[in-house]
Image (tube, rainbow, N blue to C red; front, top):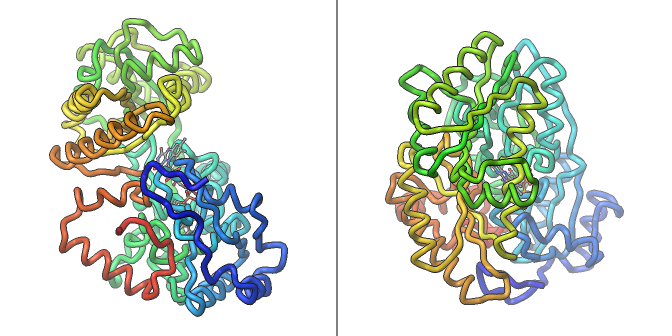
Length: 474
Ligand SMILES: Cc1cc2nc3c(=O)[nH]c(=O)nc-3n(C[C@H](O)[C@H](O)[C@H](O)COP(=O)(O)OP(=O)(O)OC[C@H]3O[C@@H](n4cnc5c(N)ncnc54)[C@H](O)[C@@H]3O)c2cc1C
């Protein structure tokens, strides 16, 4: 049950959270029905998308900031670990209580508090699903731009705590670019308010920025004020085949001289193409050793002009079988190929180790070529796809779950890939974060003095080390 390919586990820890008096106090804070200790019911809260299980001692479902304050005060008094959880679809084990203690499920804190069309912001609780926020904004003609592919399951709190990216990042940036202000309960139970409702705000240190990507280690986000944008009138998507991944990735920098910044630029290599074709029979060409998908948005006129330009640039740079969607349905079909990759890759093995290195986008062709070499050198299957437009490649080493040697080789590939990304001027994670999965590699990317400052910040927010222990720093 506690098997992890990432570290030796000593099994579930029993902490002070399991003391009857503590559970009684938790029940009095959130109500009997919102404290779950039944082993079967807590089990799903012991895993995220990494799919390694470390069930908590209890799952607590608070409804308000005040309840979270009381829980954290109790955790400090009795010194037990507290791990915040959103949708539980993180890719680095961030929401998983590897040191035991309680999980705070934010599911009940899912209210929309305010939406302002004039001032282009929305205020909501952290348990709102990303898709719900996007839909709510769209209903009043506005766009919440961050769009992780997990948007149907992920929560806003999880997006902020992981600083999630997505398809639209090349044009719109990542989650932190859309967070104006936060209410946070620090580990000691203090309520702090960062930022505000304005895009401009230079009063004091940027604690909003600090909380974005803090992986539930500094405080629990209890309310977020998020930036909205006018919804673009139209979007258009172009998909093209290439004879090599290198050729597809070389196109990424060809739009800039034309003054064009596509909204999304995604690539997939031949193994992804083969896998999705076998699984879903989209009718993809056997000659496609790579596929590039490029999307633009704006007014109808702009989009028509820019989509034609995208087709032209792709055609001039080795793309063939170029398809442009002429309707929303056609556009969805072009994107279906991209969405189908992740599950399809399981045809290559029963364990997929998915990393998300990032490099300056001009280095992507070199990155993918060298990752293929790493796979070959270590006799390990690797498939690459991802948000190439912002340099973020999802590297998938796929092996047999029962084959310990193959797993060890894949782990060697991971270490070499991280070093490669750093050597190319990038880093070890573009959007999935560190959690416990990448904690052993943090010093590949962060030097000692910087790491010391990060640890000192953690100490200020969480002097007793109760929030999400075992993550990021080991
Ligand atoms: C199929 C799939 C596709 C994905 N695609 C993308 C993608 O395109 N882009 C991308 O960036 N990521 C992607 N991810 C990764 C993941 O979904 C994102 O990191 C997402 O933001 C996680 O949200 P969550 O609500 O599930 O967070 P969780 O997994 O529940 O938690 C993640 C971290 O946030 C902390 N946390 C949660 N809520 C709070 C809170 N209220 N206060 C403080 N800390 C909190 C947790 O403690 C944990 O450390 C994908 C994952 C899957 C499975």
